[in-house]
Image 1 (tube, helix red, strand yellow):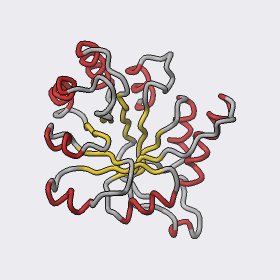
Image 2: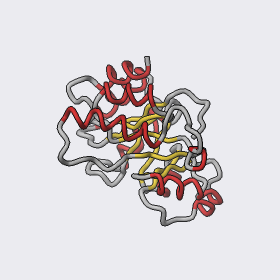
Image 3: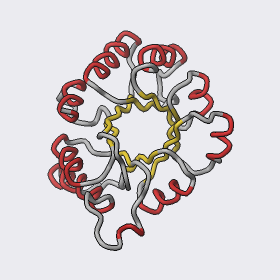
Image 4: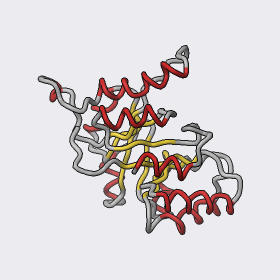
Length: 211
């Protein structure tokens, strides 16, 4: 995987209580330096008013990706769409919207390679979690799983398996684990959510990671 761009941090918005809270949350994240947000528009409370507010707050400042919602992405002129399955034609999507950015979710290297063949723009990689792990082993394995698949330095012969797409790590919920990932792997960015260090404010987390 090759990337000349700085590490990028996205935030997955999973729950919206009201529009005032949304505006305060997004404003704080933008001021803290977040690069983009990811939204599943099928989540409860994500209605038309929410998407309109997100468009007004974010479109000119940070990236906005909708999950599995190409039509809504077009309608609100968001940055791009993030697909969970490889059951569509990238060529057809680009034909109707040449400027749209396309991401794909993967849980293993084979899925990453399949996405690369489709010529998308980036991959969100989230390895399967170990349900029997303790909080300590979960933190260690979180970084190790990425380091093994996307090492910082390419070993001899690794170019056969390496990717040329930017990879965004997700599924990590510990700050120390994410910092280790940045130091030891070649991922281009990360997607964090409300499960990431829930006792620390969102904007403080963003500043801590991007400092």
